Length: 470
Image (cartoon, rainbow, N blue to C red; front, side, top):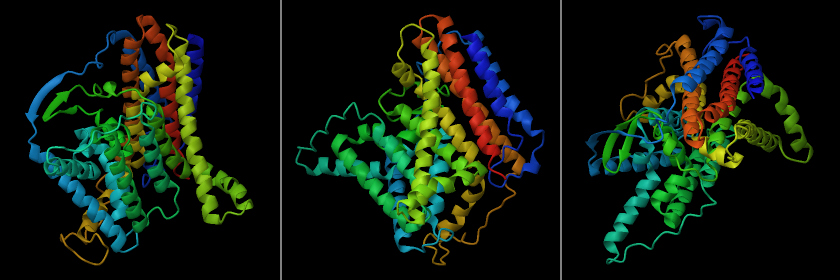
């Protein structure tokens, strides 16, 4: 067992340092790096190995499975109402701007807000401040307002009881919704067309309202809404927690251990990692070399160039997610050899929460420069959301300050995010192993394989960042 683990670690370690190029993304120049590029690959892997050894020696009892905390304040009921109203107003504004405003991505607020502020900025906000999307979720706010109104006007009868949520569905609706959004972002040719985004937002909102009307508001948000589930998982990495109307301070990472294991959870987290992986892959030379060959079969059977390209990209996206899922399952099958009769399916579900910090690490490493630079454009666009030449807030002339964050700082954030995210995954997996396995030696042996999974994911993330610049 140890020989296999050591051999796999050596192979993964070598893979981590193979790229001699910089771990760069966006505007980060390869010549801007402060120290030799290969050193970070070795350093990242060494940090994981040392962390694994330290956990095996020093972390002898589970510390995260029963989150404790300290009550801070009571949240007034009006805060939720105000946040919901802001969410609904923002949603209405974006839909109106997408349909009625200029159909140019650089002039209209919608593409920048959706892809930068919502998709990337809200992920960062969730890790820093908790599940903020739940408070501002517009379709949840609409459903709650309708439920409250119906209960007041229904002559005491109220609304009918929701259907029981099918156990077999689990998180699958959320996983499908998340992949559908990323497909629009990465595959669709006119992905930044404001009207397309507005119509997609209306369709998504309609699906969520139907789901909440059938299975209940809270239950559907916990399992069926892709954005609600995704941001909630990231928010569980935060030390902030809402318990009813109270705000608590808890141990970081302790809340993600309480994620309910259900069908589709592994697929959703692997999709979150795989979609970001695919985005990075498509910006490198490898994908540019293979995509013409992938497009050719679809052209040969009669599809147009645009549709053939989207089909090839769709295949690439699904294959990338499948590879990430397969790699995780391979690590789980290795854990299965530690004994005590645990099945591969059981272990895959019980350790899935360890993928949550990796999903965030990939997102932050890949999109940080986008958020740091393009996120500034929102201030100017908010003053002219329709792209009509208005200046409602007096900020229409605001530009982007590319000196706000240096290229070197961005690079450190990218590499640091990958390392911290994977070390956090190791911590969560080790803590869970002490619960799953009766003997501590068996728990430690099982984590040899999780170490290989973490090194593999780190290596993949470093390679993707290194491949982004020619």
